Image 1 (cartoon, one colour):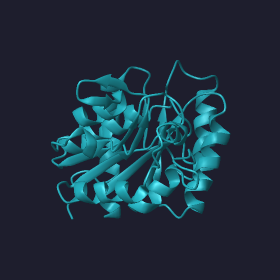
Image 2 (cartoon, rainbow, N blue to C red; image 1 turned 45 degrees about the vertical axis):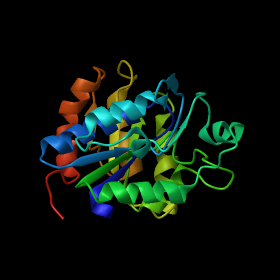
Image 3 (tube, rainbow, N blue to C red; image 1 turned 120 degrees about the horizontal axis):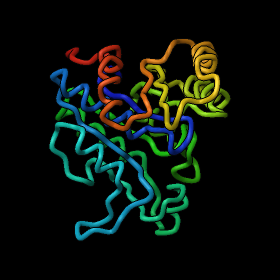
Image 4 (cartoon, helix red, strand yellow; image 1 turned 135 degrees about the vertical axis):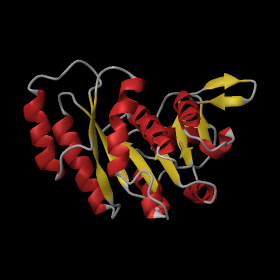
Length: 230
């Protein structure tokens, strides 16, 4: 299954993981694939008549083309916008990666590809012993790293790349996201990121919203294997 799923991680929270994950899901769907989505853990949710709902998970559901229930997409959802392991402790729940893995395998059986979006950065805790990296390892899919082009991204990106490698998770590539106006000396920073991460970016997402990101990421999806079959 490693070639049929992707784990979208980032250098930090708020770097554009959801924009990238949604755009990739739409791109794979346009290439003719049945695309399922998953946001295993989310904190920061609104109360609705149907229960807690996280905006990122809802955006992913709108981007995928396999009909899924909300709990299938987001099995662990917490109301406060705090680290998930703290939110889980507050309501006396322990995030069980085995449950996440079982849900993921069910999605594998109904789709050609599963796009999984992490929460926070690579080592963001999900319980007292495990992190987002533990989820990626359990699912056995390659990681795509989203790097927000802003001051500090060089160290954050290099550290995350090393951590992914140390955890034994395949590194599928990285995507640069202009999360704001162009950073100072952007071209030099992109060149440095290319050297630190071992390859040029799969795509550079413009600072123009999700629609523009979708167009740019069609080429990235093709490079990640869009349209290929089992």
